[in-house]
Length: 438
Figure (cartoon, helix red, strand yellow):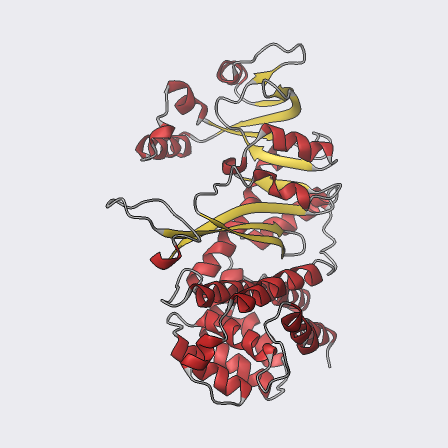
């Protein structure tokens, strides 16, 4: 058997039945020995990821086939308890802890200075109204409460693996979650986040942990020179055209940072201004100064110029978009936003099961990517692989059940799931390779 096949099979076995059963007993999901196995619950609910309509009836049928038993939807419903939710929740975090020990990609170039590259971001979607008490959202036009779930994620770009998931109500915004990353931070990490997480206090705590950050500049954040004189950023930019300078950020903290401002093409700047003017959020009622600053891409970082030059700063921030592509895969191919009507325990179990599948998918995707790039020189597209799994999940399950060679799966992915060659634009993997060679 080929070495890469052995790796893939090893990854498929990471959620071992014994560990699953032990976890089920620990949280009280299974109290005494039964014919029904906890591992069959995991397989069934992960399988529901591929169904847009995953009613209890469909779930009971799939469970019966997987467990070689007969169970009614009422019988299945009785097993969907608070202990069941806790079982899936702890299983997710157990899997995250296991995969965090995997060896990361040994990238060099612009990444060689960092232990990990952590992306923090969130996505949200609507839930059935009955969950408004558990996951309150914003009120609709009729002033009625809605249910919206927000998933906060921390993702290690170098190992293509999740570090953390956190399920919160929509009312818990990104600003409140800004400090969450501190609990997972290690010396030498690089943190990439969008403006929703901007907090000078948290940025200082990142720096105090001997870690690095890269963020866009938040308008109206005070800037000072080395003599504590307040700087008018717009005047500086109009005077010098571009900036790469060490200053201090925040009126209270006075955090030493490097500010990098790069002029934008007129068409790009005009489009950014148009979108800001049309934004329905009244808090973003932009004035002349804020609109004028949109003529530049303005970044703040504590990565020294000796590690990244001005051009690389913008390129590195661009790879933050990877997490948005992952969210798109969740919603387009893993039906994360499609939630059936049912009990709160059933819906919560489905959410955690989908996140378990997503975590497993990321592990397998990384191994597929390494194998195909090593053997063919082609770059796998995450979205195409997600679509391939979604469209062919029963064929893949049958192949694994019949112990067929993984060669055919690898060949199909190589044939159908790679990026198409483009002359004018680099894909994500090409950008990563370029940055690792720089």
